Picture (spheres, one colour):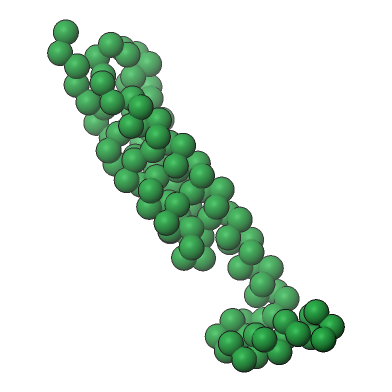
Length: 110
């Protein structure tokens, strides 16, 4: 029997990579890409489970799914970090490096 490729496996892999890279942009792009990757991976996973002998690139799909999960976790952690940082030093300090240093010194008690 001739095996075919899962239709969204490459897209899931690319979106998984983008979700890891995108976590550094305040977390939002990584979160969006990761969620889209997981939705596509679920659809292809169901196709694969119906007839595993028909498809040849399940490992690519699985790798993309794992990267998407990692990207989502990193994005959530980074978004929490940004929220905590803004709540402790303020938005103005995020724009001004010198003010950021002053506020961090105040927080550290120096």
